[in-house]
View (cartoon, rainbow, N blue to C red):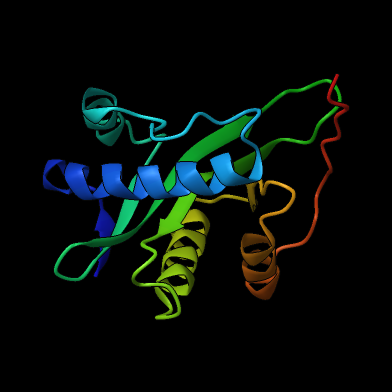
Length: 153
């Protein structure tokens, strides 16, 4: 049920991107525009051909969840250790499929994928106020790595 995204998944992914954007818009309308998406169909098609940015979908009669990932490597940095990280850029479960362990299955799939390609860790960002996401990731065993702070002027 979980696999790399294919062109046929684009309409379902676009719908999920709308849902996740609206979560962010409700939390931070000063930053996120309503009724838009992070990627359009052409951008999604291009991403699907980029192995350094895999997109995974949970499919069961339709796209019920997605995980956009980015593989990042640091090598030869003056300060930082050499490290290969899988960054979860976006993860979303359809609002009608929440509570059915779709998110857990997606996260575990991504974790296993990261391990299989030699990643040292998985990172992601969670917006302050998105308590459900924060709780979910903590339940998956994630811990705070760093905190980004701001002052709105």
